[in-house]
Amino acid sequence: MSANKNDAGEILHDSNKCFLANLGYKSTKETLSAFFSQFGEVDHVKVIYDGNGDSRGFGFLWMKTKEDCIKVAKAAVPNGFTIDGRYGVHLNYHLDKNPKMKHIQHEKNLKAARDAVAHAQQAHGAAATYGAVAAPPSG
Image (cartoon, rainbow, N blue to C red; front, side):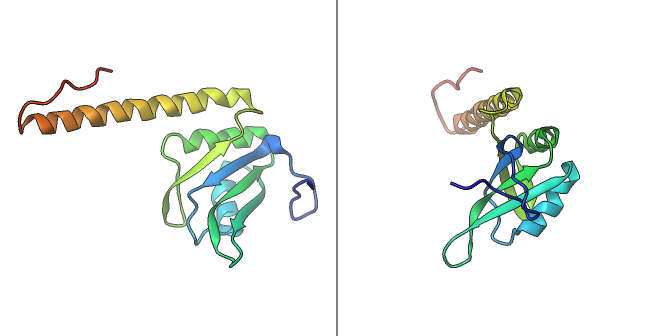
C-alpha cells in the first residue's frame, strides 16, 4: 500500500490525519479545505467517491501540525460541524496514535450520556401526565 501524498507530492503523516463522516454530497476538497483552514494550515483533504463519482459521505483531513488537529478536534465536540449546509459533520482524530486526545473523546461520551439521561427524564415527565409510569433513570 502506497503512502498518501498531498498535491505537492509530499508524504502525509497519519499523526496529522482526521477522519470526516456525514459529509454532505456537495462537499468537495476545496470547500472542506476552506472551512478547516480557520483552525490552521490544511495539508490535504480527500473525499471518498463511489464508482459513479458521487460522494460516499466520508473523507480524510490532514492538517500541517498535530496542534492544528487538536484545535479541529476540540472544536468538533460535542455536535460536529455544519459544512456546505450539512449539519452534524463528524470528525475523529486518530486517538490511538494521539493519547492526549482521549480526554476529548471521553468528554464527548460523557456529554452524550448526560444528554440521553436528561432526554429520558423529560420523556418520563411528559408520560407521567398521562398515567402511572416507572421511575426515571437516576443520573
